[in-house]
Length: 217
Image (cartoon, rainbow, N blue to C red; front, side, top):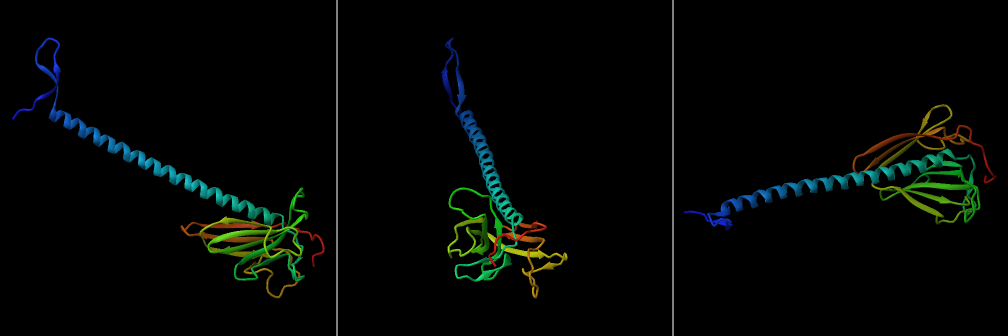
């Protein structure tokens, strides 16, 4: 059996020039193979780019949360507050309920608008894997609902806080048991673990000589 050529007669009227059907089929097969290879490479590049963008977003979220936490602790002051019922609360204390991890009073920059007090009460809590920061300004006679509430990190499976006291001793709660006028710790060691297995340990210093502000006690 012979295969005919697909083409046009030569200008001189000689033999027909062009491709045989077999050659055309081979060319199509080669082109299809190269196209599949190119698509696979492009798809892999797109997946890599998406993964890189997701990792960049996660890193930015992590750094943002750490900056906020660093700033809160760096501006902490030894100033107790009173809640809306008049009950006193220490300037700095670890969780007093099942969700709260940490509460503290901090200074804020004076500014115009709905924040009349130079002090803010801050609360960190873990709720369904979300680490949330709540803030009240002014800090005394605060409403039950926070003035501000933001999610610092999502998919948190573990967070542990340890407190370094003035004697360089590590405490698992603040204030330490049987200690009056504990003031503020010197630093907090934080251990943070996420759902994907990533874990962070960080030492967070507090002001070395915090001063009392106001008369919330």
